[in-house]
Length: 185
Image 1 (cartoon, rainbow, N blue to C red):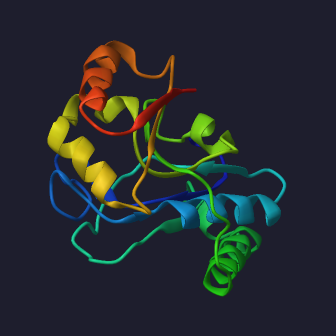
Image 2: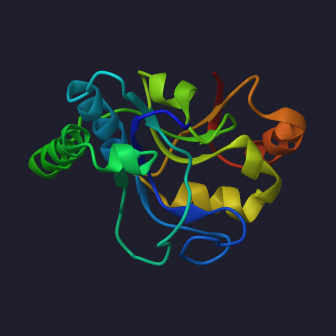
Image 3: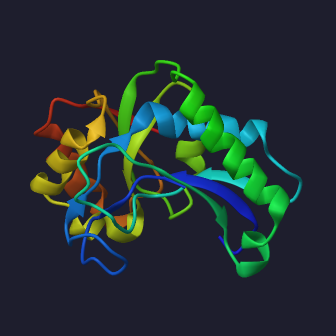
């Protein structure tokens, strides 16, 4: 993003593990908590910072309980901004104190690393998100892992209409083999 940001994402590696975890393994994504984290980050938003979901990336991947990262990005300057760090800490505190609101659960496909479209979705809680740059790593096994490692189990696949590139047709064919309802955004 290169811009000051407050973000949330789940861990996982769609391809080779470059920053922890195992290759082609996803952690467990708690979709309702990711949605609540973004809502809370907006509530604690500070001037000059963007709020966004990030695509699933990096480890750890083998931990057997749901996990999210709530982060300040994306340079040392922002990491040392105590107001931004306080916004993230307050968001984590909010998540620890509350039961998240219920939404239909989805997994996401397409777009960039910073998932603006998925961040703006109001009617769904999104678990794992595979960005455009990782779609070539997806096969039926990885899509099934996205489903089984999102909690609660998703009923929908959100697909960015213009964010899939040449992989769009192949991914839509894989999704036909699942029980997910596909929603184009």
